Image (tube, rainbow, N blue to C red):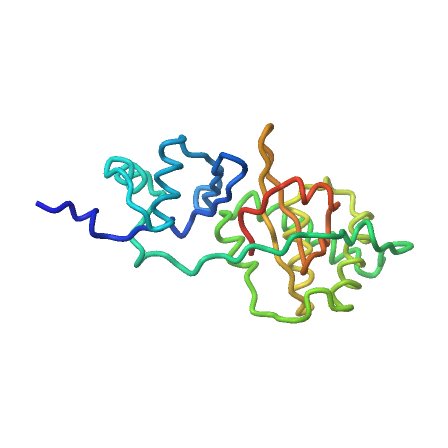
Length: 220
């Protein structure tokens, strides 16, 4: 009897995002809020399958049973990766001081982001970050508003955490109909996960060095 798995097409599950760093493949499961890697044999099988090549049936079975692969009819549109960054707003632009009038709003949004990260699953947080707003990636309104947020954030006595601050700033910009991308990246040896906001080739809320040391794995 013909194995039904042999006549089906498979792709990564919708909750998984991945990137290749050297010889290793790193995955982010937004449903489970965790990062993981595949063993070398499974990595090879995975890359063969997504490239449309045949692989060993037992390898395919392991990838399907672990939820890494699903039938193609279940797969959503692929995520577009961001442009390579070339500058940082925090390093190339400065303001003398933050906007004291915006302090309450920035403090509230930062505090709410901290609470939301603790109480709302990652995949739901990311769904709320998606927007259909469109404008030039580095329009003056976006740059000025991001600068205002960065400088005002310095006045807020809450610990800086990349996801908290990126989520707060993205919501701040969305409220003003200004679009940017929330980018998640990873590094190895040692492992590090990070995120930042990006518009075009500009990092909005972090240093250029820290962003380029992480390979993008997901863009929202």
